[in-house]
Amino acid sequence: MSLVKDWERGLTKWLQAKRYDYTPAPYPVEPTRTAVIFIPRLIGDTLAAFPVVRALQAYGVEHIIIVASHQNAMIFDPMIEQSKEAANNGKQSNITLYTIPPLKERNLKAIRKVAKAITVAHGRIDLCVDASIKKGHPTALFISTLHARNNLQISNSSLRCYAPVCAHASQLYEEDVSLPFCWSTLMKDAGIADVPARFEIPLPDTIDDEVVQWLSNHQLEGNAAYGVINLDGSQPSRQIGLDTAEMIIRLLWQHYHLPMIVVCSPAGEEKASMLAKRSPHVILPDLPRSIHHSAALIKHAAFVITPDTAILHIASAFDRPTIGIYREYKGHWIPTGEPHAIIVTDGPVDNLSQSQLEAAIRCIPLAERH
Image (cartoon, rainbow, N blue to C red; front, side):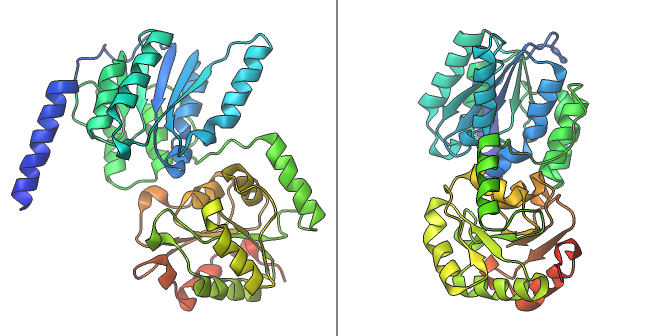
């Protein structure tokens, strides 16, 4: 069976190369005035790829075009608003956002349409950074249709349209190294800029101010007044049930004596509300259930506890002490906030044991308040 699968993979790779590959311009591309970041991914992947954005900005690329999906486009909204304000004030608007359906939907027509629209609007693109980390048909179609002068990636694709300078960062990715470090390494190796390897989420001042006011109204202002808990990841195996959540809250209260704010998406509001009703130490804030409101709450928290999901990476973005609960260890997604602790459960994260949590809590002394 494995031989058949290997043969099928080899055939697919050969067909993609035959249909979509092309010979790019020599690297580096000079001058690099326009760049596309192709990232129709989930929120966590987007936060991890911000070294690409910051490197292109540091290099002085005149126009950055971001291709996202409806699942992650909102992460770039603050940057797009800033770009629009700059344009209204007579300055150059240098960030443009296009959206396509998620790659898993394989909407090839929409992918081809956006790639063509970018070329019509901006001419031939100097550089495309493929941050999809996918080597399938939809990504190959976009790269081929866009036909940038050169391309960068960390997915270890063998297509010759990608610059050889990607080899080192691609190897790091294969070795399960932290994803922001992979992107930062690629940007340095490609001669674009040496930028920090960190997760990032732009936070609108208006939302941060709204959350700070809410915290003040509830006597929770200050960086040591509360913790944040999130119960749900994107898959059932990364979701914490109410009984386990109550155990977590009980132990956290015993150690830190801090109230816990539960953050959630609209889909998780019912469970979060039930937890707040069950425990006097849990607060479900009457704020919009947006990713940016959750990010602002995390920014001002004493610590964060969450399954492996976007909330974990937001905690890293704001360097919050973090307890990350994983179904299996993934080096790409380890927390970068300090201090941090990693728990790997036996099966779904809801299998978290009291002894595992107690050991993790001992690793987070900065959150203690006696």
